[in-house]
Image 1 (cartoon, rainbow, N blue to C red):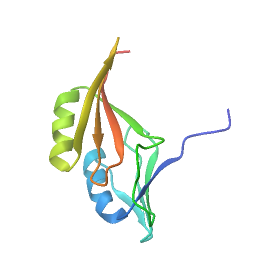
Image 2: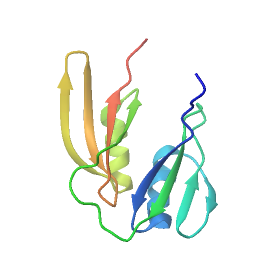
Image 3: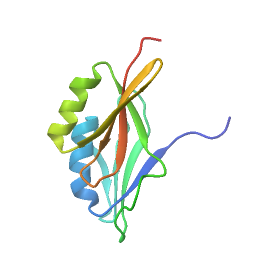
Image 4: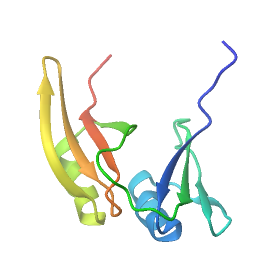
Length: 118
């Protein structure tokens, strides 16, 4: 296949402020800051880059797309993210997977699931 995931871009009001949260959350660095757009490095495991793009309008309603993450200890990771400024929105499960929905400091939703052995 010729298509590869290169970057996930999140619309936001204050890209530099949101970059502070996401660099700490993902343990990555800012690659470039163009004032209206901040690009974060991909994860050490080879994940896509994260872009933070300034837009004039506030987020309204539920995200149409969100990012799912996994962690070996979901509860500990959720506590760490809340300590960084995320807000826990709810816990969910279906047979075989449990996840927590969080909102970043600008209200963009994302999920953290328990990492399962493959």
